[in-house]
Image 1 (cartoon, rainbow, N blue to C red):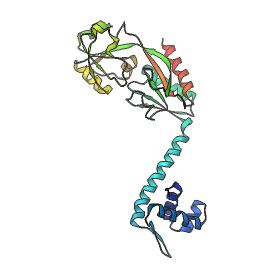
Image 2: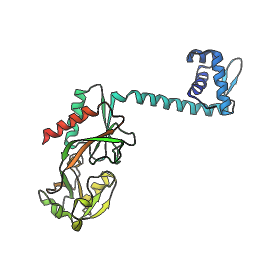
Image 3: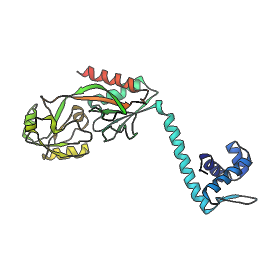
Image 4: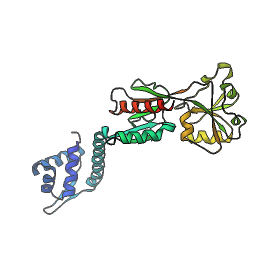
Length: 285
């Protein structure tokens, strides 16, 4: 016999109410049903859980251990139900490095004004899907097409590609750069979530590469002068760091900003978010 949630609820009710009679009232069943349910739980676990006298009901040592687990399981189930029920009333938007750059604040404020019943949360998750595959968000801002066919996406805007340099780097004196200016440098990349790979350069002039997996480490290394970075414009808006400057790269293709969602279970807010973000990026062009 399998242990069911009704068995655990019965055990907790008996202990918390103090008697089988009061537990029955709490659960809305008969006293006989409470006795049968407890007996079924004890049989399933192969252990006695409660001591009964004419005056009281107390857990055995095993009963105390089972009671602790039962309360935790029931609390987690309650959380699960609450989480599922909040679906349309809460919107979690994931991002890996930078959210929406200079549009982030405008997005938050305009969403709150237009959709006060849907609470917006921005969630940073450094994964290829910005938390979508992990269940950490409902929609994700990504800057490369999702490879997983479980996800769909729409382009909401374009961002310039910038080079991040140490402030005292000789190239930092220029107002803009070309890809050829960086071919002899070491490029620091995040292959999981980044938008730049050596393939952006011609085969004969590709820079050396080092890897990182965190934007703070990326900035720290670049500030030291050991490496340079290439990133979407939003990074420069979200991560201003002493010792690091950003310069546009004139001949590098822009980065497409996408909103991604589960193909077979899109959040109800997916389309309104796409429309709002598209409007924000278009207005900035």
